Image (tube, rainbow, N blue to C red):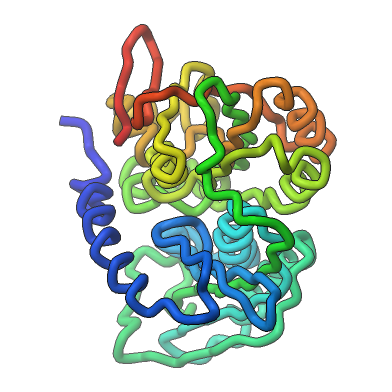
Length: 340
């Protein structure tokens, strides 16, 4: 039997069920600063003195275990920034400031320097000011990663919170219409999701370097697209945990679905994962398979949106279209596979 994400310890269906109850609790805390509360969307939206702002918090996950296996930690900070900034832009927000949280089993100054190198590089690329953070020493909680290359290296976890500005109405997906084009922006690799399964399938000695390729930042191309085509861009989805089932997050706001009939042929690490996983459902519900961001826009605007992506080296392609039935359907090898 081929391994699955759930068997590896991450049951996406169970997580989504838990999130539904969590979102209801979160909504109960709404106050005068949250008139545009977006439960379950990519970013929280709030207002301060009439100005609309956004916030998001995320971490790097078990990709850090690959970093430990190679004793290479100078890029994971980019992942921490990207997992937040790429979510903020999905509602049309421009990320502006961030704070980090680095927890270690003990003080490891060399580790701190490497992690900070990535954080600073990511922030500079996205135009984000790193205005503070927290360094926690937690020896009783972080007990030890037996796979790490350097036994003297501290064990650690890394997360960030990023705040952005929102100068327009939030792009939620409610404006999506049947026939809208789905434009996929190329990923740089696995990004920072699916590693609980990927680490079990890919030998780190052979694939570790590629697995550590940092998450691509889509901030600059998407903000440029919004300057030129905001009225035609109806929804955006960052393809992270749950992979293409994430489209359901914006589909729910527009009561529409998605047909993915133009996804790129798996290359590199994704081709290797396809050999080992087998199930198309499992692949496209766990990994981004070469597409890290999806933009739903008016069909007539697709060419202009893709030209901007090309200018930024984001290698866009039309991967499908919006349909009436609420679902996310992968069309591959003559089969239609629901990813929800």
